[in-house]
Image 1: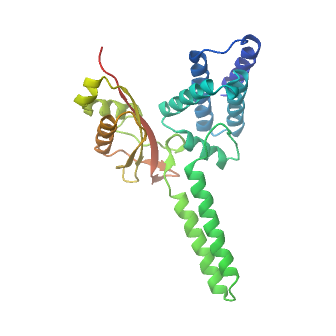
Image 2 (image 1 turned 180 degrees about the horizontal axis):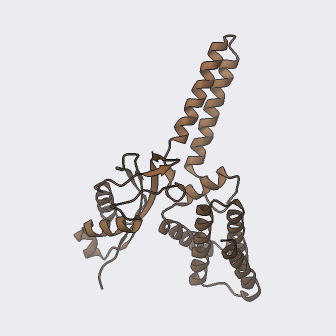
Image 3 (image 1 turned 30 degrees about the vertical axis):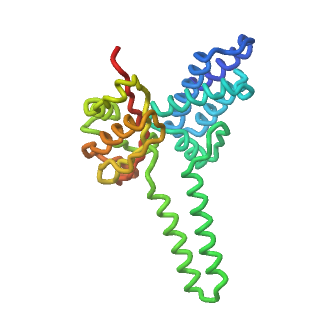
Amino acid sequence: MKKIFSLLAVAALVLVACNTKKPSAETVSAEAAKAANALVQAVASGDDAAIKEAVAAKEAVLKTLKIEDDDELDAIFSDAFDVALEDNGVNEEEIDALLKLRGIELPALAKAAVDEAAAETADKAEEIVDAAAEQISEEAAKKAAEAAEAVEEVVEEEEIPFILVQQKPSFEGGDASAFTKWVNSQIVYPQAAQAAGTEGRVVLKFKVGKDGSVQNVKVIKSVDPELDAEAVRVVSSSPAWTPGQQNGEPVAVSYTFPVIYKLAN
């Protein structure tokens, strides 16, 4: 694993020496995909050293290609990085939140909503304890501490990002690719979209509940209202999965899933 990230760092140094001209869109997209795939592998390994090396390698690529100084290249890199994460069944907010839990910063990624929710929860818990401390009654302080613990438990029960759960959910005895095949067999390409030649990648996020049911299907990257709606319809009608497990217990697991619409030539 470490060898992979070391090679990324070496590749970045080679680009410094050779890349005197503005890199092509293809080069930037390829480097973004490599960085995203390496980061996902590192996070899945659970090795903090490997994760930090992958983060450093990504930052080295950004500086090497001078992407930070070029809005066009920055947009190309960001889009390709997002797509590579989605192809691995995760989005940038989940990766960012997981790195922050480990005390690892990834400046290029946006702040995760889950991180903000955790901060708000911590503030609420602190307010409850502080309010109780102002009261003379020890019983009131005890109840406040219990309430703070209850709030923390709610956060712990939130769904776990797909790539980090100990035992991932399975669909009809297979992995995520089995679900992709099932979705493709159920999709009905809207006639209006076909007539207009509309193609693209609709990215959904949903939760596989503790009971294996598919819940909270949402569009996080839209292509077309009709294509979006059909993707949501099919994924929402999914048969039950075998739920994921964490520490031997069934847990709710979040999953980012792309539905690709492409017309036959």
